[in-house]
Image 1 (cartoon, rainbow, N blue to C red):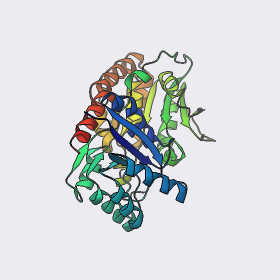
Image 2: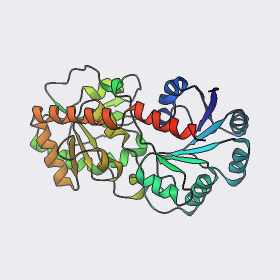
Image 3: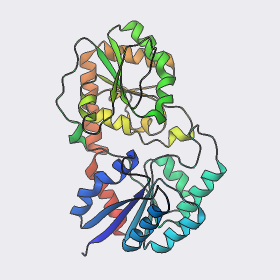
Image 4: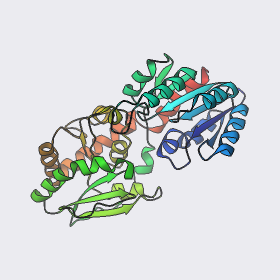
Length: 326
């Protein structure tokens, strides 16, 4: 079978969607005989022209998460032999979950123009299927071995860990009162934030760690409990539970909102807890903080679940099956 050139197009190399929906697949795709490349389409007219030129040379163009105005979408469709759209966020609505006519219109046009759609969860797949029946669910996945690292956990604290960015800071702020309530029950409780910000003036001690791809696995492994708060709206339902997968791959029990893909991945009472209100947040965190054996058992169950269902090889095979039919 001759080599097939695949061009992944996104807003930038450092975007998490680019790292987890494109770059981590490059070695595996090469093993299947593909030649994967990436192009950044953001940054002005030169970036657009370069992307269109590279798209013309490719056998398959995969657009990650971005939608375009009609003229640019038309040009991209014209130069692309096969066009695939990959989405891991509810880009058809506003970040507060409310409806956006403009976003929905561009989303619908992008989906309709594509030969196939790869959706990160079932909610996104259902939305895409309204405009194109050629949709496959390929959940966001992680390289489990990357997170299976030896790292000493502190003995004088029980560290809750949250990994994210300023864009998702609001979810952490939402749950902060519940975390502070739990800290009143468990004085050793501490909040570790792996991100690009910190939280000043909190009633729970905060350890702020700047995010770094080279250290995130060790920072997670040295924590005790992963937390994943979300709101109950369409934007949150579009999330693909990346931080939950990272926690579980690192062997941590998870406490999560009962929302979207989080509720599908976390097995309540087995790999962690799904909660609905501040009192449940505080109660479940306190239970885990007080019981090292429970944390260990749930963490091991979580790692096994990710390895069996949300690991890189399975997602790679699914992606290859889609590409081989185009």
